[in-house]
Image (cartoon, rainbow, N blue to C red; front, top):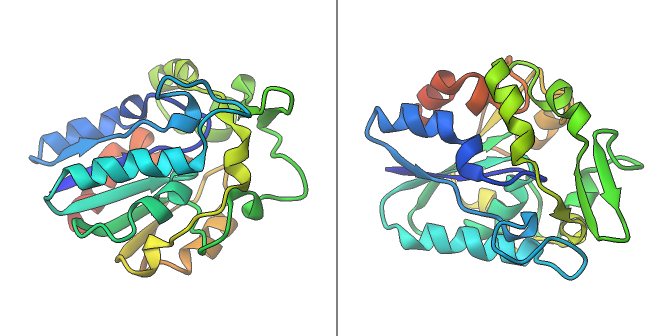
Length: 231
């Protein structure tokens, strides 16, 4: 078995966000990989109005999924659920989705349809540049309040400006409609409130709740590992 981790919006270096999980999974003989997302500027081309968007993110993740034949669990975090909905569709090796504080779009839906009347207070959008990102001063309090101080200090170095047009680009498939899925509700998440996660989770086959913030794979890696292995 292997695990493919698809990170959320406005960050880069998925391997860093996943590193605590990679270590505890490797102890159990489970390999994992965290693909890069071009819309976050991870593939050479800068993010922006003319930069890569959701289709490029989908293609990058889909290529990683096609590269392995062993049974695969895809862990989709937050915006990663938008990417995974299309990227994991029709891939025979993908046999389970673990959706962590994740969006579950229907075919034709885009990220913008899950937002409120205006941009979230922890986000900063630059319309001229065509990018958006997390306000660094709100990163810890919104997303990492239950993580160790060393993680909180390092996380700011792994933020990224992301192409704004990913928010309006619709998905062309919904893998969660065909692939068995588990939704992990992060009950203390201050970025995506738990009541919204529970609404998304109604589409999944199984729902698990943990009293964690937005990044349980950083704050409680052993618990998330045990959940993964139970799948």
